[in-house]
Length: 244
Length: 204
Ligand SMILES: [Fe+2]
Image (cartoon, rainbow over all chains, first blue to last red; front, side, top):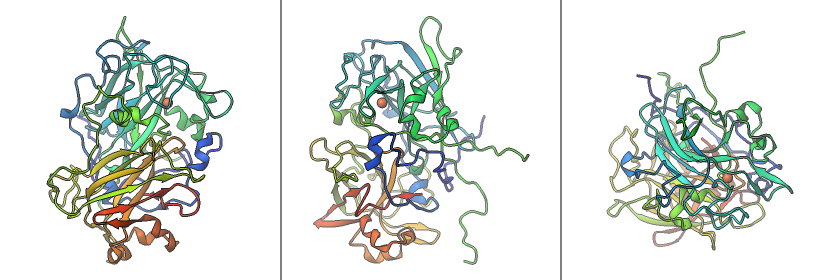
């Protein structure tokens, strides 16, 4: 059995050149929502190294099945399986962590009072799901492929097909929200939100490949999406101040 | 050439966007029927030991607009400073303190409210951290979740010794992290993302 991610120890510092910076004029809303002062940076403390845990007993039977979890009647759209693993930066599986997703329906419309896009709501699609990674860090959702949709930013900006992911680690400082994109979508390189990410390599790490062996013949295609959380230092020289 | 490190890069963050409520607080949004209750609806259960407090605030952006689309998560220890976490090694936390809470700004007023116990101090290798509640803030326009902390203005002595507050070079800015007492057990804590009185945000 693979060694799983340690649950104690200081967190690896975040690489702020890898993540999108706060201020990204191509994504207009960020301009007034970006702190202008530097972040106060120091090593993680117990407040970031501990965090909430969620038990499988809180999950409903259909929580990870977005096709059926709203009304019990199937949602419209291309059936897809989205699966992968939660790993830490040392490559070790992160078991037993909560993963929540939300997305637009097959037409690109969200079930939200703030979304007024022309595409209709699907009466059988709520658009959210959740699951908990297994002892090997694996997770799986059944859903429909979300549609692309236009959004007010530039005159003609469209979001590529995407699924929003919210992921917990064993420490609150590992908390992450990101988005999964689909291999081959020509809207990816045109998207101002994607382009808040500085490097192509980092963007590529959010693009899920089509996984023909992960799907079910005559039923559903699959996309594989691994998520990497901040790692933890495991040196035995930790937590001692020299000279004290 | 040198040997390769085994490290992976963290998945890059992307904004939670305007529709974060669909995934995180569907019942609050009005999308009932998927989950019986929203996760993190309360930080405590009845019977939690310590002083029960209510903190109210809003999140304001750099144009002075109160944000109606922010979502916040909080994490804290119990009144003794013990975390209700599987990896808490110092002892067993109060079973009625859940520690983690999730709350969205009200769609009309923009106010959020956190009802919890006042946390105890927590050790750090450089001394005791003053009582504080960690916050993580996401919204449309925020590319990576913002980390800040609620400290308490009525903990002046502990605050003065807190190794994390003491990292803040511009001392006047410490004030942006202090919840202001507005009554018996009630506090106000407004968060300013940008501009004058900008809240201190951390990279921890
Ligand atoms: Fe979206």
